[in-house]
Length: 305
Image 1 (cartoon, rainbow, N blue to C red):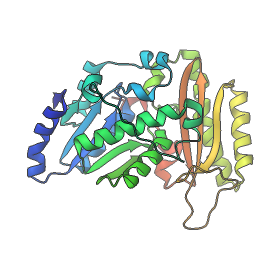
Image 2: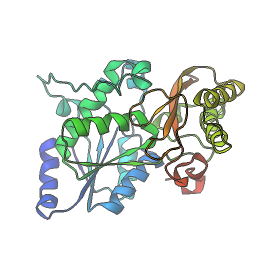
Image 3: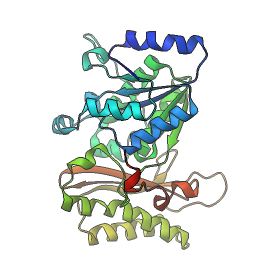
Image 4: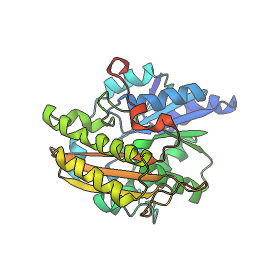
């Protein structure tokens, strides 16, 4: 694996692969790698001839300067993990390289950026996400870009961006990878105290409860959300930013889970703060496949990198 710092270096390294018509996979990240990131990298390594990973903490998508300052960073550790996952090129630019003097542009995606994370974190968040994703796709020019289902709204926004700007890339969304207790893997999990970690698990438990109630025949989203809220309250998780049931393609609110063919699954999404740490999670109902159900997507401790 090689590490490159500049756009010019990256393009030189990828030129031979393009001449050889190799399939290039790309995983955009902000570092602090965990098994969720590594799963995306390994999937790209299996499906593509060459895998590029970007490591860049993107300031414009952080509305809270404290959150940006506290975001975990350990590039040496990340380099080791990326190499173990089969990554060929790690692109780790500086802020100045990505946003040079005179940079004065931004990408606005309407509609799907407004609810959920958009409402909780403000319009600047997805403006920052869309801008950096479009820049990285233009820089790397991959055949496939890989994202995780945990950041469900981000995947919807990126699909819209790819479609609206005619970006010539396929997009793959991989299931959420979870800790042994069900907590969705996140770079922020390391900031949880032991007690906060016990409370945080209630997020995945509440989503599992929604899955169970649906399997038992409940399709009214208000009823499913009520059961989830009651579980969160019982576990002491009270700082909920949102808990919603939306169309997984448009992010419009839905009153019921539609079972007829052609209907998109309902995205049940939650965001909460646990001991000051902001966490998000979600589940699709009905699940696209059994592999996507929370109970089926937990990585056991012995398999952790």
